[in-house]
Length: 391
Image (cartoon, rainbow, N blue to C red; front, side, top):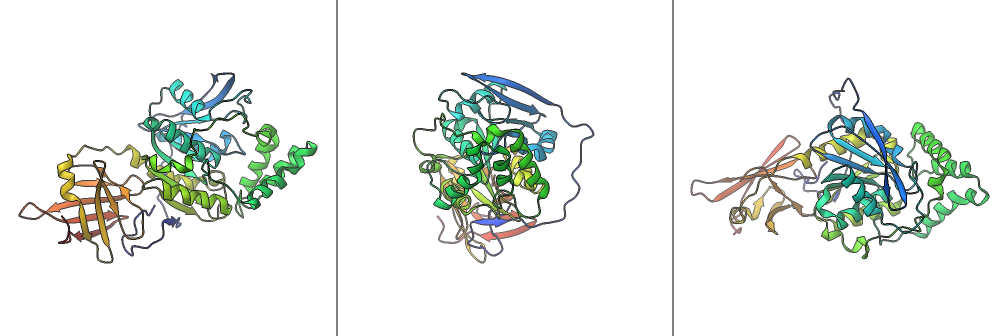
């Protein structure tokens, strides 16, 4: 991730994944056991699976086409280090179809309570991303962080072309031909990027075997009383967004609005991927998700406000000015042309971001005044003297 462009202070608000050689990930000899169950909520039974253990609970919310099997490619590596949870939303996969009105946020709330999960990092794809956002607004105390993949947000519209594309893909359902509709979606160039034939095959097979996924309308769903796109500024959970390069422009627009609306949100573009990144490129997705999970697990300490006030000011980073602010009792960090990112305290003088591997440490001079800040990112170190105009 590259939330801050320290070298060039680029104005772009997002980054692109750059392929890099990585050391092989250590594999566990025995995969953690997956336990499944059905939770009865009002008049429906919701199918869920959980596995693994660890300091972080990670809950996965699927998109509006596939059900929880969309996470098959990341399930085992997630279970190896975390308590992972995935479930089929009502009307999808192995869960019952809704018969009366219900709130998807309360289904998730009930499931996490049933599994004794007090706080979780919520991962959502597409409409699952919209649900993750809705849940963060409805139950902020339960959200450790948001990791959104090709997300959309409630209250924001879509283009006529987006609607017509969906109608065309669904056209065979009018004659009961679910397999033709499944084929249409599997061949959709926005859903799966070029060259991912195995992913395309999986989409077709899952939809052909689960035609109820194609027929779900969402007519019984109850959403938050106010549209979520007007409330994004209320979300203070660390938020990372990834979008496939070939995803449809409407999704890119929604993702951009989410990034702009949630304070400190960070966005990456996944090269050669469409809408279902977790199906197309699970390894690349894990390269993004694992560090984000680790950052949420990192321990923090409380630093008195009077100490934080001494750090607030302007710091000369050579090609630009780093602004350290104080908002609501927490430090923030900003470089020119980019968002304001909240800082979290590792110690009384060292802080870090929760959306990227960036650290900043403040140093005093002989007189006991803050003289400079040292910024660490991606193996680079940048010394930023405090400017005289700072308070």
